[in-house]
Length: 502
Image (cartoon, rainbow, N blue to C red; front, top):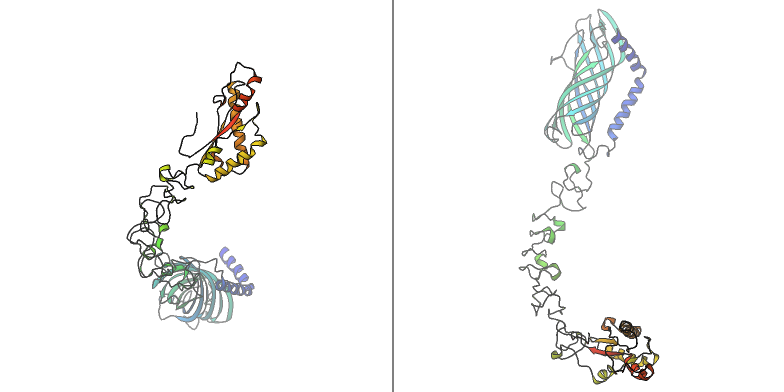
């Protein structure tokens, strides 16, 4: 009784909401045809499938059991719209219209027209077990929805007026798809249909609800265009190179053509008919130095890209093919011919020239001798007041002359030697002599001496007096002699020679 009550309530709801059901079916049809591409992206090439088919019903109820009787088929037709969800599942909307009848006798018979609308889920064997493009593709499906029925006939010799009703329905079955191309296929399927009503045959005797076998045979058409992001004519699903630039010729896998098979596609290959390497943009490189033979000045000798593929035995930056001095020591500056630079043009290479910026004879290491005026200038002294390290104004002209000499001999070193008299402790006089030498250097630097590292200061304290002083005499009697010893002297020499250092 619970089942029958539930069915009666359900049938009333179905009749009351028939209009709503039709509207919902229409909305679902629109959804299936226009479902978001993004939602189902990267699956099948054409995601919507339209099936048109002939349909036949075989009735099973109180009057007959037509199952498996091939001569008891009532034909109709149908339309299904299927949407690809995944390699395993499709969602489908199935609309069918057909007729069914049974004639037990003139006393008991019926003739019914049945329309159905169901939403279903298809489990595909192709796409997961078999290849999606296999010719034969078995599948299983289930669906549920409703049926609209118009039936008339006789029950127990009593004529029954036409009866219209809506009932719930569900079905489950299997089928086989036969794929002819990406766009066209045929199919055959059989479904077992359960209904929520026993009134199809006008025999509501309280037994099982009327049931049917539904056989469908028809054609399927895949709609839409396959996604092809890079526009190369190969659908994304089969495109192994989905980012191919526009206009590039591709193979059946969607990858750029590589005529010489070197792994570099023709559109990037500077030598498309000769096998090469990716490092050389598809061109051959016989010596394997990373420079294509067409650009390599020394194609049979491994070299460096910086030297256009030529070797450089002495590492001086000049390729052996152009190097007139191929054994130049490491680190030596060379000219375009690979030979050592001689900046001052004195015939002594810079790497051997002690004075590379001033011409001089080879026997002097490339350094010039100091002229007489400079030698005389080096004998001059800067004198200081007692216990002072300030350079007096009267010596500025002398120091300016020394600056001129330094410019004349730019490679020479100037030793600035500070001295003190004997008054005071040895430690104090040593520090005072160093301050006097530094004061002279500071003046020269302030006047713009280039390369101040050439100015070397040394303090000698009271150890090298110019005039010997009798220390037993008074300061007044030794003042003139001591003034001669409070001084800074100079020595100019070449960088390689040891200066007068203690």
